[in-house]
Image (cartoon, rainbow, N blue to C red; front, top):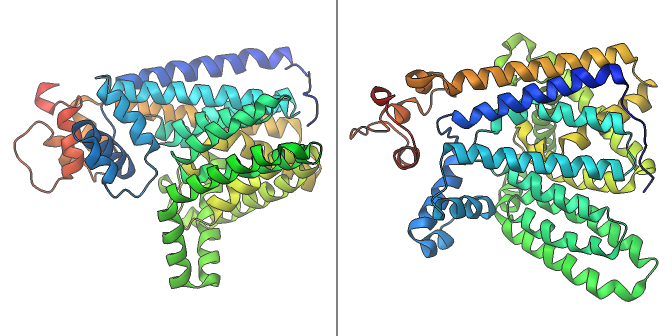
Amino acid sequence: MTEPSQTEMNPPFRRPLFFALGAAIVLYAIQLLTPLRLTTDGIYYLCLADTAKQNLRAALQQSFGFPKGYSVFVFLLMKAGLFSAATLVLSNLILFATGLLLTFRTLIRLGFERNRVIVACLLTILSVAVVKNITQGMSDFLFFALSACACWVMTFQSRHKWIAILPCICAVEVRFVGLALFVPFAFMAWSSLEKRSAVILPVIIPLLAGLGVGIWAGRRYLFSNTGYLRNMGIVRFVALTISLHTHDFAELVLNIPFARLPAWSQRFMALLGGGAMLLFAIGVLVLRRSSPWTFFYLLGYSALILSWPFTDPRFWLPCLPFVFLAIHAGWTALLRGMPRPILLSYVVLFCALGFVALGYSTWLTFSGPKFPYRYGDGKLRATYLVGCSPATGEVNEMALHLLRRYEWHCPAEQ
């Protein structure tokens, strides 16, 4: 690992940076006032936690398509009587801030230039992928904090770095992509074993145990992926996954939700996303020379995400600063750098779109009785509208149960 750069940010750029950061913090804090926002995956996580509150044994035996670590976290909040829409958002904000701070310290320790790390973290804060999910009951921010903790500990220059195996195992129990953390851990172990062969057993045994826990926790992911591959064939499977993930990268670099764009722009977005993904791949290879640890982390993370035949930019949320730095490294290597005015213009535009997303989320937060009509794509509108009514009808029963238990009031009471 190289020594961190001590380059300080130029004074003219400090004020707008701190202003943007302060404005983002205020707008994020306002989201504490939002009604409970539910999504398909979030409903499953929260319902499992609520079931555990009533019957822990039944919850543990319940068949569940995701690792149960996040549901355990929510269960603890519910058991302590602390769960509400506000505490859900607050926990996400705290976990996000923790993950971002630890990622910042990790990148500095890995030798990345301070200014670039600061910009990468600012882009992460104002990424639509973060803004959209900060109010949701999803596992991303708990995983971000755990994975960032593991990465931070792994970069210690002392024997305490082996403690990283603990947050690695916890991260896998929250999201299967936590297995990616064992790739840089294995690199770290191999580098140490070249110097001290006596530690081979104390290192290999926890590593294999962690991998075993991760594979068991994500066995449904592996089985479903194998099923897709068997049914589609290798060529169609690869073509589909590449196509879908070009959408992810297009959304990440443009900071615009794909669904908000007109149909005629889809081909352009696919080309842009493909270019961004190519720059990312080149950047990962470039980082092999300057930061081998980062190379192995992004290699493991990409291998897991890019082989998943679904699209969602939030898949990349826990390592967004790394992704932005890799894309920049790829651009620099391929095109010999980017003119400073163009880079600054891009950062300003990206941040402006992030503030638009935060403004939209704030508008939803203060929608009052109109919230069911404005939130999401309308799939849960009927569920929100009957949240305090004895009527049922065409509603999501699991979501309705959550709304009736945790701080949703019907429009007449607002």
